[in-house]
Image 1 (cartoon, rainbow, N blue to C red):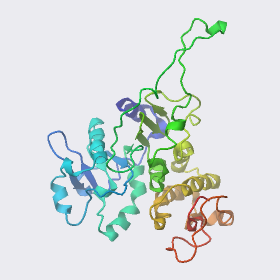
Image 2 (cartoon, rainbow, N blue to C red):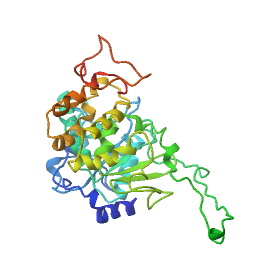
Image 3 (spheres, one colour):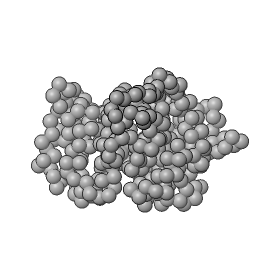
Image 4 (tube, rainbow, N blue to C red):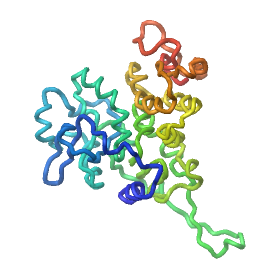
Length: 348
């Protein structure tokens, strides 16, 4: 992980995020050290230009320690590690290992019993991930208690050394391995089916993903894993593993931030996003708001409930994907105007 991170920062031109440094989230977790416990810090207590990591994870159904009005002052003093679920503890370990002092976790940095604070911070979530030094993705965890570090099956990564009868290759060693080993491994991961994770993956410059088999690295330049630490086979963009969210989106996110997004690119984003799962349908537009903010600079048009005014006539031509969930009927909570794709409850 350190090698991937250092190489990316030093050598990847496309991964240099000019915004990193000026933006500090409202609150961050100071991860401390083996001798000092983590604690909550306000932005005013964090030096300008300080790097921070973000955590992307599934909440799950179990209750866990969160930031509330009642424990706000206490968490500024210390956050006992024993009070945190395993995924949070593991993320703190990774953050420390990669020599970063601060970590952003939504449930620990947004006051959970304050609707006002949630609305304010939700509108800033795109900036949080876009300006993070890297994102830690708990891809194999179904909830906050599963953790990052999984026991891997050595049989999955078993290598073979075949011989060949082809004359020109007869006296050379060969290694047989899947060209894209992550194709089947990542398709089932719980995290990659979540709608909120969509913009986290699109906007993050660098992602360290913990799957059930191994660790994956993704940035705008390199897609790699423990099996292929120097990158997958194929071209720069073709080597991205075909998983539900990231296959085309990491490439797309670079175009978003380079201000060259096209209408076709936006529609692809919407189609991918609409296939993701949401606990609350009322979040359908909120969960993609960060991507819309990034796209707005490039599209240079008014944003209209998931569509763009400049391309409104084309944007109205969405339809519910065949054999998929039908649009919500009357009586459901209002999410978006009926002419917006966001009013549908399934893939469009």
